[in-house]
Length: 334
Ligand SMILES: O=C(O)CCC(=O)C(=O)O
Ligand SMILES: [Fe+2]
Image 1 (cartoon, rainbow, N blue to C red):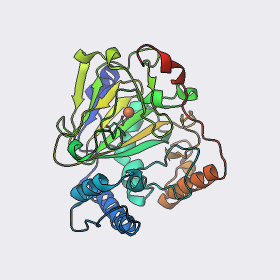
Image 2 (image 1 turned 180 degrees about the vertical axis):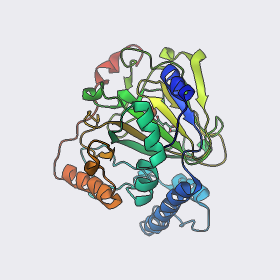
Image 3 (image 1 turned 45 degrees about the horizontal axis):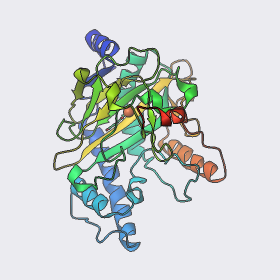
């Protein structure tokens, strides 16, 4: 069992966040990295063949190769949809929509026993559901992205609470965000920041609607509502995690370094609670009461995502988060 001390648990409860170092080991990171290198090996030649990319950059290490590819592409999603660990949230799902639902992500991240131990301790139950609101964020140096790119998967994330991203039926869900650092995360390279203690509120803070169709994070809390004096940077080493309460206000800095900032964000909650994105597939990650319900098959998990894609293409209704649309004319949102 990966132990959190009483002081760590107290810190999370009082401040709404906790930084935990050394949760993933070197082998976990190496497997994940190899899975991502293989994706670029597969997709770069396709992009070249389609005339979207001038060369495959095969000789470069992942960091530089990814940055060069992203810089050249007119539509970043022609590579990013192969890297994210979620399908795009679209009713008009492309026939070839993709994601990385590979075995390294399943075995070394989503069902990582250290991560599940931490989630069990903080959430306070052994019945853990892996929520499908999850993303890969691989952020190139800001200088290598057009300033117009405000997608939170590759650029800064605006202020928000993770609960606000979910559909309104999930406001009671006791969901924990587990943000996993694959590279060191520093203020310089765009780590997250949070408003200490901001989770101790009755309801979510006002969010302004952005373009809610393409990305879950495209709602934002207006800066005027952020208590700047309580903002703390969430630096963490490679292999460490940052835990966030569902109501903790957070954002991320720009990547002002000369390499990538890479993380995954995962979410867990007690089995049986609403996911806030019912159209996408989650799974029982741990259960003492019903161990036979635990999903431990990476291929079955992958299939659940592609089956979901095919159901949406066939017409299954995508329930978008429309909670914040009425605020579009609010004076703080204008
Ligand atoms: O990685 C980031 O920059 C933002 C991530 C985030 O908002 C989250 O994990 O909930
Ligand atoms: Fe978030």
